Length: 367
Image (tube, rainbow, N blue to C red; front, side, top):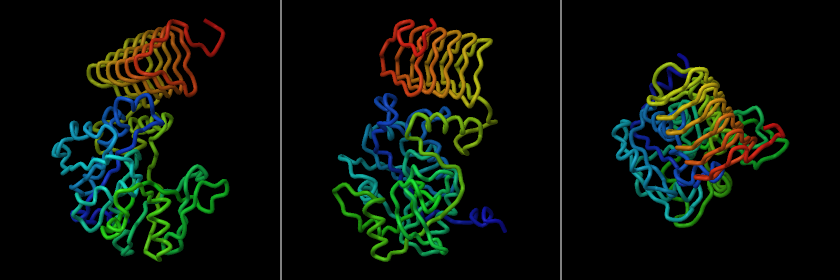
């Protein structure tokens, strides 16, 4: 019997999930000035919808959202979770408490003895049931989901011994001893959450986990090669959205055939426009003749004029891109207007409502 078939029989009805969604998403500004990062449209749905659907399909029904920044937005959209087949509850963090403090803050809303904790800005495709199964088989105090990456130097590394037991937590280094990194998903025994200090900022990575190791507690890693991406930067947000559209990243929230683009109902694409690379065209958006969109994330109500080029960029709600403008690896805020023939390249960000005149910003001498 394959591991997938074995995992399919894992019963998660006695497991609850916690999703930490309290961050301000500063790396994605200006988009997160008006909406929390987990609520930004990703392949046409709020990013959090993909994670909630994955949790539901694993067999978990009760989910607690640990909120803070613009906390009301989550409950206004998802309500009690019944439309997704879930029971959602919300706990607001009134001051920043860090990852560990955020987990401790939701303890009063938890009932289960085993709690699955997710960072709310990770797009993943690993088998949740397999992670919980490892936790149960090892009788672990905490089980960490670890993923193997080609270049672990940009991440904290988590080495394990032959049995899978975690041996250390290492900060970013140019000579990492392992390719295993923390994937931002953990299974906690409730008793461990009860031990986290309440009412003050606590980091699980720098405080909770090292203390457990020093106390000879049982920390295990569940290691796999499943799809994983931290969606915190514009580059990763664009890449993750594109992977969802093209079917590289799995999501139970998306129906139908995947392909080179996702064009929502009510959007219009003029003849001669090219939309490729996993681009998403939001509801009510208008794409002009001869425009080229490659790996573009276009929110609802955007207007992109004839001959404009948008590559690996995010265009916020109701923004306007003028004729023959070139937007590459940039972020355009809600309601901004980029004039004809402007060039915004390699990390440029335009704040909401800003109007750039025709030819007002250039990276080359031609007009």
